[in-house]
Image 1 (cartoon, rainbow, N blue to C red):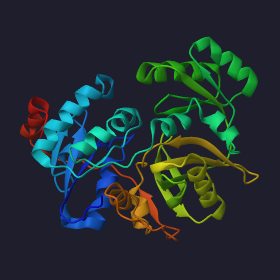
Image 2 (cartoon, rainbow, N blue to C red):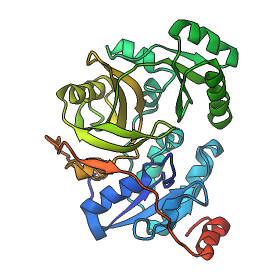
Image 3 (spheres, rainbow, N blue to C red):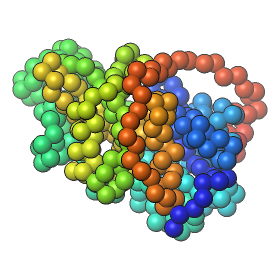
Image 4 (cartoon, helix red, strand yellow):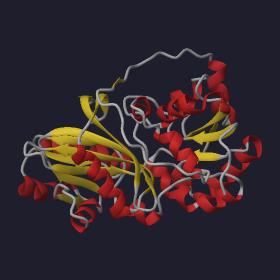
Length: 350
C-alpha cells in the first residue's frame, strides 16, 4: 500500500560523525534536499555523544535505542514507545551490526505503521565478510582470497599463503594493511577487542580504490548506482574525499550484484581496480555508505528513492549522474549547552 510523501516522519540511525562516520547525517541531508520541510527527522542514537543528536537543523528529535546485543524484544519495546509519540512512517537503519535485529522486526514494525526497505537475513549473510569469497566464486565475481581466523597463531598460515602486505579486517568494521607480522598481530588484537571474532585476513590487492553506492529493488534490478574514486583515505581506510567517476564496467558490476543477490535496499561495493583493469570486490556493505550525500549531489538521490520504495511507490531506474562531483569531508566544532547533553544522558531523548 503506497502513501503520499507529504509530511512524512522518517527515523534514521547512524548519527555518529567522527573519523569513522556513520551514514545517518548524509542520509538526512539527502532527504532534506528532496523533501524539504515536508519531513520530520527522528534520530535514533546508541551513545550520548553522537554528534548528529545536537545538529538541530538536521535532526528534529532524538531518542536513544538499546544496543543490538540487547536483542529484538528490547528494541521493539523501545520502538513502540517512540512510535506512540512520533508516528514514524519510514525507518532507515545505517549500521551493519543493527540490521539483523531490524530485519527480524520488519513485519512487527510495519504492524505499528513503520515501513522499511531492507534485505532478507539470507541476503545479509551471503555478502558477509566471512562468506564473501564463497559468494564471489558462486557468481563469478573477483574476490581476493582470504582466511577467516579465530586465533592469533593462524596469521602465520595466512602470511605463508599470501605474503606481506596483507589486510586484516574486523567482522563488522575497520581494516588495516599489515606490512609485517608485528603489524598483523597488533591489528588482530585491536579488531578482536573492538568487534570480537572472527577476524578476516585477506590477500592484498594493489590498485585504485573505488566505491559504488547502489539501490536494489529486491527483484534483481539496480535502480541507482553511483561510482566514486577515493582521493583521500584515513588510517581506518575511510574516504575523506572522493570524486564521482564514469565507468561502464563499474555500473555493470553493480547491476550484476543486484541480479545475483536480488538485493533489496541500499548497498555499497568496495572495489579495488588493479593495474590490469580487473575489478575485485573487497567488501559488500549492506546499507548506504557515509558518503551517500554525493549520490544526491550527482543527480541520483538514493535515500529519497528508498523512502518511496518503502512506502510502496514506483521508482524508475536512474539513467545518468554527473561525473567529476567531489566531496571533501571536514571537522566542525558544534557548540551546544551542557543542558542539551544532560537531556539525552538522563532521559534518553532530546
